[in-house]
Amino acid sequence: MITGELKSQVDKIWESFWTGGIANPLTVIEQFTFLLFLRRLDERQQLEEKKANMIGGAVKAPLYNEAHQRFRWHTFKNNDPETMFALFTQPQVDVDNLTVFEHMKQLGQNEDGRAGIFAKYMKGATFMIPTPKLLDQVVQMIDKIQMDDRDTKGDLYEYLLSKIATAGRNGQFRTPRHIIQMMVEMMQPTQADTLCDPACGTAGFLVAAGEYVHQHHPDWFHEPSFNEHFNRDMFTGIEFDSTMLRIAAMNLQLHGIDHPQLIGRDALSEANADMREQFSLILANPPFKGSLDYDSVESSLLKTVKTKKTELLFLSLMLRMLKVGGRCAVIIPDGVLFGSSNAHKTLRQTLIEKNKLEAIISMPSGVFKPYAGVSTAIVIFTKTNNGGTDNVWFYDMQADGFSLDDKRIPIKDSNIPDIIQRFQQRNHDQNGEQHRSRTEQSFLVPFEEIKGNDWDLSINRIRYKLQGK
Image (cartoon, rainbow, N blue to C red; front, side):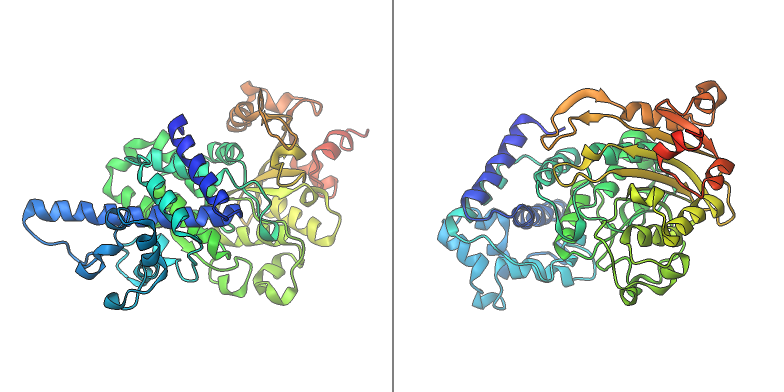
């Protein structure tokens, strides 16, 4: 959990960016991230230098050679503001006409991964700090932040990301952290899982899954094979927005996931057609941005459900990306549950009849404020390709621990602990889920009833129409 001092330090840096002329929250976060990365690069090389000195050798393939020493954090932070700013904005003739920023971008071209996954996505990045004074202020404040362990680094970045207070582009907005954590707790990632978020944004779901493993299964990290899996193969994120991709890469690295698989492309496009049956767990909140043209959508997705609606296409994509036996928890707009078009009905029928639909958690419309007031639900299913749905568990969430207005002030009431507990115990007779009435907050509905109601999954219609009311 972020401390008062760390929170205050981040707030002051944020305020400096804003008073210095950078008002776009994503731009602030990206520029902050670039500077954090420069500090991390220098700290990494300093560590390697200490190791080399202890054994009497030299650093192998250093990130900074002799000519680039002035580009290192511990060197340029001591310059006067104008000299420091010149290093970032004026190419240095004696070091291949590079600036500090261009040198940082060049590290992404290294194939040995020394600079980390973040550097790989630096292409197209722009240095946007406008004045020597602002650069110096921010560098000095970042230098004072204590980032000695994974938890502190992760908490710092999570707090930074929480400051995104405006709706994003193309229907993107940040999923509340407590909703992400609830979904992860419900799905309980395993040691062998391969996780994917096909619209990863800032990588909130992947980070939360990694934190779940650290908190619940620290003993797994005693195994070298799992460490390798965790750092390289366990987490995959797909994101078409290059700014988001850089932020996601840094978010994962600061949470101790060094080499995640991050893919910079549109998950629904033909370029993604090769991703089939690769993942055992998908966690996602894909964008609900309206409609796409058929010719911009990967053809096999349209064979499952012919539609232009992104929320339906993403569900089709997830079915294709999951291995048989793979699980998915995804946030969808309520319309997916009761839409009357052929595409809506076909997709619901596919989930229920050809796979195993596990649960529907209806969420109040205020959960995503101040970004949006859309009503949403969480759909949880297992890919089987041969059915398996017997009873679908429904839960009507009334409170998530925050007020449901734009202020989202913390309150005492929260259904989240109850949702996690009841979901895990939903199929046990002694828990009573099978005997609850449709007027209660959670209940089970048999497959045949849903089939007889034309695959409608609206919790209100389930409650009343199936009872003949």
